[in-house]
Structure formats: structure tokens, C-alpha cells
Image: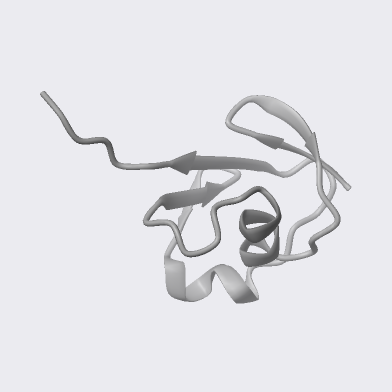
Length: 65
């Protein structure tokens, strides 16, 4: 299905947020995620279904200063 990830149109096969994150290479990474501007806790990603056109935001912490 076609979704938008951090502003970029993206095609994924996964039907859940957790599956999409794994597919996009974020499996196991410490990140924050949101679907359609709503924060999704890591514990809820497995049960968060995606639909075509959803917008996912992925934020990874950075170090440095």
C-alpha cells in the first residue's frame, strides 16, 4: 500500500505500524513514531493498523551538540 513516511511517498507491504517499521529498517531502533499526527507508543505499534494514504512520522534521537 502507498503511505507517506516523513513526507516521502513510500510503498509498503506491511499492514501494521510495527511491520512497516521493520520493513523500512527501523526494527529494534529507538525511535518515536506517529501516524496521521497522533503519537503511537512503541507498545501499541503491533496493534496499529495502517491504511492507504496514512502519514507516518519517524523521529530518531541524535547525539552531539
